[in-house]
Image 1 (cartoon, rainbow, N blue to C red):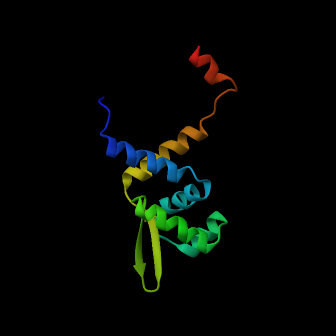
Image 2: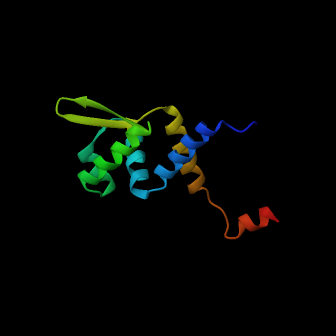
Length: 108
């Protein structure tokens, strides 16, 4: 497979940088289930509403989540299926059972 163009690599690297923050990752994971209000995201993640709003601004700018206004509230969800699949795959990988030292044996 040929390497992507530099601007695509930059988008990928920025996406992983944003998801590297545990609170931001919790925010995105909370948005996987469908539209959810900022207050409910704050409750689910244990973060303040202002911190959640700050993270949502960054995630929206990176096209990882989108917001839809309903009356006075904005409901957030994961932007598209690509992001949802990537996160589901990452979670499945993190939750796989393996024996301690198993990675060392595979690399040998």
